[in-house]
Length: 235
Image (cartoon, rainbow, N blue to C red; front, top):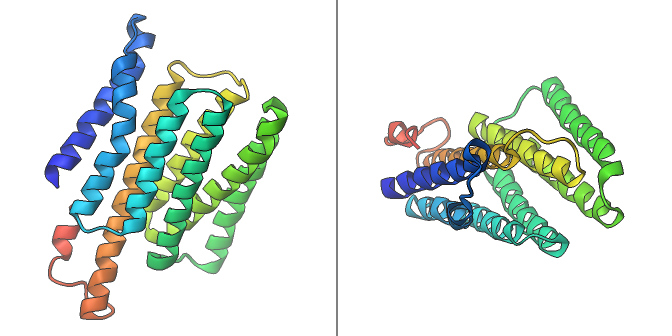
């Protein structure tokens, strides 16, 4: 299990470094970039399997790998297929959140948070709409709605998953601004992958922690965390 975690960290570091190389030195590190990106999520999925994590989480990560690989191919058909793969991953996450989610905010607070996410979705789509090709507007709006729903539902699993959902929303918004030809920061792919990697890691840790707590509640009863809770806190 530790080796998978270390390998994921090394791959992420290598990939992010490769994305910075052109901006810093003008050289190309595409071989490293293209080799490491599709490997990130399978390694994280292997970590989940070794920990006995939920299968929908493995599915979400592997769908993420599919999206990562397709986006590397370039072109509109590959982009749409990659977006569909990520969408399938979001559905897997929504299934997990419905099954495991126990963190609930007071009704007024929950309503304000939901309104904030809805406003962010509407505002982002409205701003991006003029810059998107006509045949991309519908798919991008539908995908971003699903993504926003996933990010909002992730809050039901606590701060790790909630942060992961918010970072996923930010990462994909950065991608959308590039499609709409908005001005981009230096090394935009670095920021996209930094937030995306953090998103998937946060969601993974959040799901594993909550799945462990749910298993303990099933065995020991509500309010009794089980003898290995301290160990699970080290996920």
